[in-house]
Image (cartoon, rainbow, N blue to C red; front, top):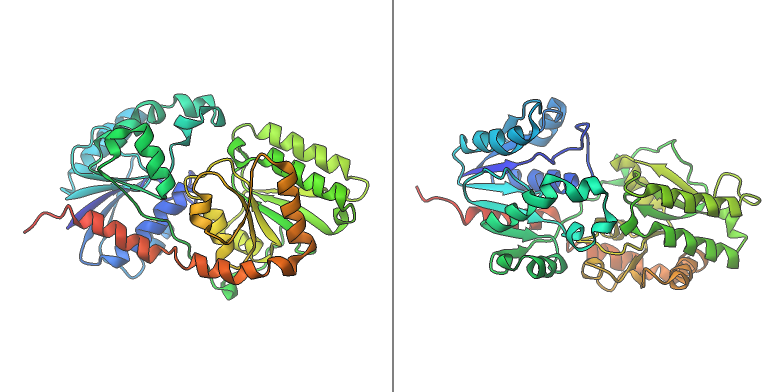
Length: 387
């Protein structure tokens, strides 16, 4: 069987390890090509995808062929016409689009993954550039409508998809994402930040739907009730700056200024973008992960935290309860008092939340890329053309 893959999101814009959809694309494809050694995969990849990364991806396999893209002097033509033609020349039985997007002029059977539809439900959470982009207005709706089969990463996303695009009702299945935890001896110590205090950790892009303004207010309220923790506890934010990051940064500065007399370096510290290795170091050592998002199509950070036994505080919105099960401490993401109380539970009585450590590890074992790749492969192989 010949499987073409629109793998334009297999890396970040610089060709390195990505997060979000980039992480999903790499992880599901890495597992797929090893699960199906008799199938041939043709991966359309960006020209920034380095040979070193290619070698890492194909190590131990012989069933992968890469199609490198050319420079994008004519973005629309390159993406939607030239890419479609190059994929068709592989004569695949099916095209897999792990990012949910593929060339609009592609003609053939297609399986696409839908991660969320938040930009259509909550356009105010996104920049004007994102809202008015061709992919948002035309590309994604066409991809959803014309796909032969759709995969969603949660039942919540599947239900939301059906409500907005009724045409998807009879062609959608849910396949959960997975988590792979590196062995601790594979991690090296980072000198970017010291682990000298207890800390509440947030991992993700600093953008409106992550609810960081209220999260900072909740931490501030906790400190007001327990001012001694301004010297011994921190709120660490790990992730790049996204849309409306200025408002988030201003709230962080306000809280830090309020406690400057006790902690001149800031009770909230923003690390910016971090590496995968740094992420796992932070997750393992955190007192808790605080992820009070207003809505998520899946919520990978809470799964990663549970996988290493770190207690989780998260919200009751989107797919987060579906992923977390009975393990996290759930809060109303608009209730600052409730969020503050949950932070206090973790920082003041850590033995009280220790039960969540083993339960979290056990829960995370239910989500793995081997299982996900098996379920995705079953879908792809259903389009195999008999010899």
